[in-house]
Length: 138
Image 1: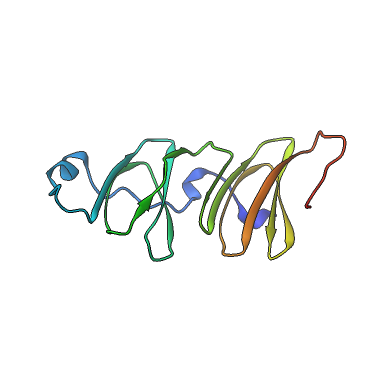
Image 2 (image 1 turned 180 degrees about the vertical axis):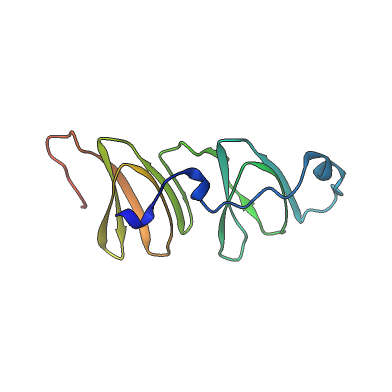
């Protein structure tokens, strides 16, 4: 399925950095409504805002004013699959296909980088095409 394929990581919609280490240092530490964090280059940080929206935070220094923000572990962009709520980033290596399902219909992801934001698409697994028997689905 080519509609989810992207050509480079710059095409992933990431929350841009909006602060600096100095600005975060001078922010009142007594306010529990501010989340301050750094995402290293080559990584992203998944999070959700407490109202049902999911975000990927890109490299840089961030300050988010939201008492209900939940941040997850920072992950390298090279990780084979990163799922955050209704968003997914999957890297499929040569010799494999990615298998996903969208409302019960199979979706095959060819080699490359894929991104989606969908309430119905669910990544299932990577499938090795060199296996003597290839099982797809249940």
